[in-house]
Length: 146
Image: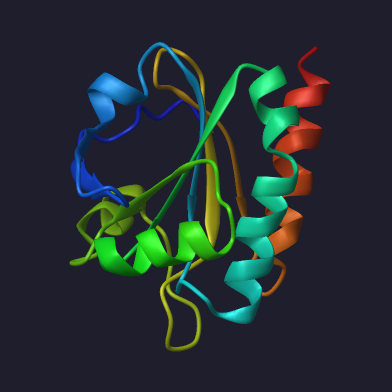
């Protein structure tokens, strides 16, 4: 804890550049890494973030998902599952490596980070097989701060 968010720029599902210093600083932010659009666990995780989106926004937090999928894949995934948050394409896994996300089995890792408004890491959780647990743990952490 206490690490600052790495500086990075990626494209979102709308093919727009998204810069961490412009979009994280000043916001309570949940940044989660997941292996693959449309896989069973990743879809369950994304839909859990979607279903709890109002609770996150009520807590003043934004949600950002990142993986190596293409902009097009993220767009399709977001539309198909009605995802109201930003998905970023890290096609070379550079940002994943900046965050130190560990691979599991033969896939990129699944890890959630929460940053305060100054971009300082205040919480992280890793569990490869329980995608929806990331949402529960993040909400519990945010609720414990009230």
